[in-house]
Structure formats: structure tokens, C-alpha cells
Length: 309
Image 1: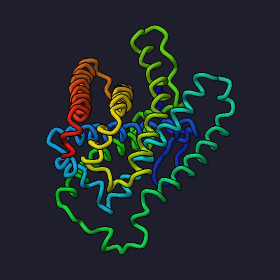
Image 2 (image 1 turned 60 degrees about the vertical axis):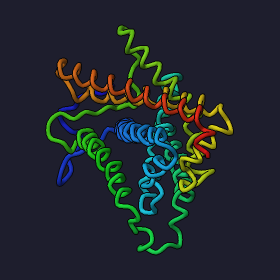
Image 3 (image 1 turned 90 degrees about the vertical axis):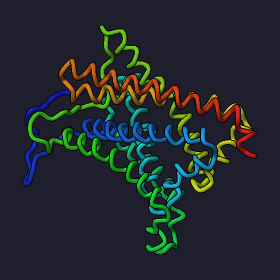
């Protein structure tokens, strides 16, 4: 749960920064990575919806990911997922085993080491197509539509991320929203809040397995160039069990992300009327978007064979 500090602990030349230690740092990065992942998941569902128009429509929607100049952005999205998952495991461990909090600095260092190793492996795999290429080849814009869509991916997520970093770092004027811990205490009175607190931890644990499996298939075992509408249809045609995996990821990741977004906004939106309006809009959009995402999964499963012709 966030706390409000009206004055920074330390003032440095040229500005001020809240020196809250590893707890505050991981809390801030958890929020930033979470917002980025929710936005990307929203776009991911949009891209999947193009399968209603056939494999070619899906290929056109995902063309940006196949551009060489987009590879670093794609890697950043994957690393946001990796960090969020690793820090989520850290939070779960502190909640499940409170005695481990006395070793929080050691746990933090171990987490940093694991993240660094995974980041190196991800960089080697995902940036490999850039090795040996000239700058002209890397920055060649093969599709204007892909460039516009890439900007639609990068710019909107950048704005809230920068805002949260600004408000949380202590560089902003006025009250700073900070937390000394990544973990929110379990609510004891509100039944809904307690249920969602438990859901966030349980869904997070399950998703660590499912999402890393998904990333392995989509980004490591197969290069992004191979992820086409035909690839998706062939996967469903060959193994109908995929719909269970993808539906589980959709349910857990989508509602985990939306609830995380709700928690973040609670710190920034104080007026009850505005909260109800914003949360109502998010809830309505979330249900509609979830229904659309689930519908396209069933559509692809039922029409996979026909889509391959």
C-alpha cells in the first residue's frame, strides 16, 4: 500500500529525489512494468482480433514486430514481463513467509542477478537478427503502416510510465506517491479487496509458468518472423489443447492487469465520483475486450483447418 511523503529524504543539486531504498525502487519499477504490460496486452488482443479477417489481416497488424528497428522495443516489452514476474515472486515470498523480509537486501541482489542473466539471454536471442547488419538495413522503414503502429505501441505507454516515474521518484513538486515495500498488506475488512489481493498473488504464480511458456514459444523457439496468421492457425489445428492455455493466460493476465491498473489509479484519483466514472469505464472496457479476446480464440479453434487452405 502506498504512502505519501510530503518532503524528500534527501535533496541533491538540480533537483530532489526520494531515497527509499530497494523497497521503493522495486515498487516503482513494478508499477511501471505493470502499466507497460497491460497496454501491450490490450494491443495483443487487438492484433488477435484481426484473425476474424483471416491470416493475412493478422500478418498486416503484426508487421511492425517484424521490422529490424522494432526489435529493441519488442525486447523491452519482454523484459518488462520478466521483471514484473520476478518481482511478483519476491512479493509473494515476503507475503507467504514474512520472516524472509529480514533478508530483503540479499533477495534484492539475487533478483537483480537473475534479471541480468535473463536479460542477457533475451538480448542475444531477440537481437540476433541485428548482428552483422548495417545501420541502413536496421533502420530501413519497409512499411509506413508498421511505423505508425509502432508509434501507437511506444508513445501511449511511454506517457503514463514517465508520469508514474516522475510522481514516484520525488522529482515532482508537491506530495510524492511512494512505498517502502512492493507488497500491499492484505485487507481485513473489505471482502472484495481481500479477494482481489489473493487473486493477484495466485494468478501471478500461475502466470509465471504460463506466460514464460508462451514467451518461449513465441519469441525464443520461433523467431518473430515465423509468427504469422498461418502459424497461429496451424498451432490450433495441430493441438486443440492450445485454446485452454491461451484462454487461461487471457483470463489471468487480463484481470490481473486490470486490477493492478485499478490499484495504481486509486493513488492518483482521490475524488469518489471521478473514481466511479473511471473504474466503471475500465470495467466495461475490460469485460468487452475480454469477451472479444475469448471469442477470437474459439473462432480460430473452430476454423483453423479452413484458415490453412
